[in-house]
Amino acid sequence: MSENNRDGKRNARERLAAEREKRRAADKRRRTLIVGAAIVCVLALATVVGVLAANAGKSGKQSSAGPAIAPSGAIGKDSLAIPVGMDSARSTLTVWEDFRCPACRAFETAYRPTIHQLVDAGQLKVEYHLATLIDGNLGGSGSRRAANAAACAQDDGRFREYHDVLYDNQPSETQDTFADNDKLIELAGKVSGLDTPAFRKCVKDGTHDSWVTRSNAAFEKSGFTGTPTVLFGGKNIYADQSMTPAKLKQMVEAANKS
Image 1: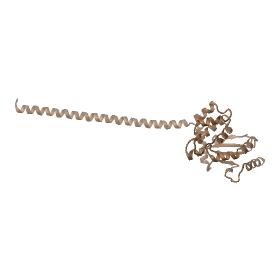
Image 2: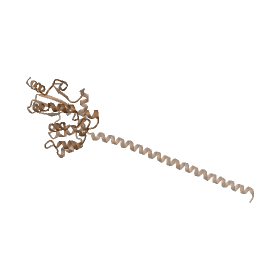
Image 3: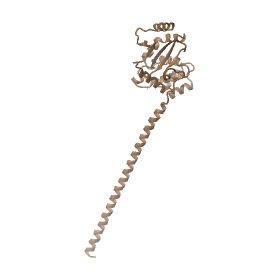
Image 4: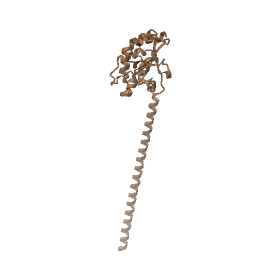
């Protein structure tokens, strides 16, 4: 074989080897691009799924809130007031309160006997509006949970009794004890006939949560500065430093005579 032939064959083999190497390199780049594209697609799909899940979660949260279901017998604008007393009573006391509010408990402790006396005698009716001021100021959900439970008690015609039990067992302002539905159900045991399957379901389902939210929104729009806000004849008597239970009784009796 001549030297020229050997050189030609060697050059041909080298060209073939070089060509094969180029093809391998091209195939490797192509596989890399394919894998990279697949990864991008997976990540993009995961992002889409994540967004959809997040939106579904938001939609679920909104839908779970549902319509504002007022408790049985609620009255007034948007049915936001729970009435206690006889419809025929000529005088009305309007109370905005928060079951976590220490000042509300202090008002209850001082004025409850007089208010009960006037209500039972048919001289006064009380319209209770429930707020969640402490939840907003200190965090937690005890104000809302307790308000929902009180609305559930109203459904059963036992609002006043349960209302009083909640204040008698009010925790420290910084303790969100009323956020525990089991605690609220336990306290219902102190009211004869209240701890029923229907009441328990109402509490656990948060049946009146949206109504409580609407009630608190009305409080925030009202311009009132705190709880309790106690209105008689359009005036906030709680802001009157000279007010006493005896004076309130005199005011009710005088208003009923006029």
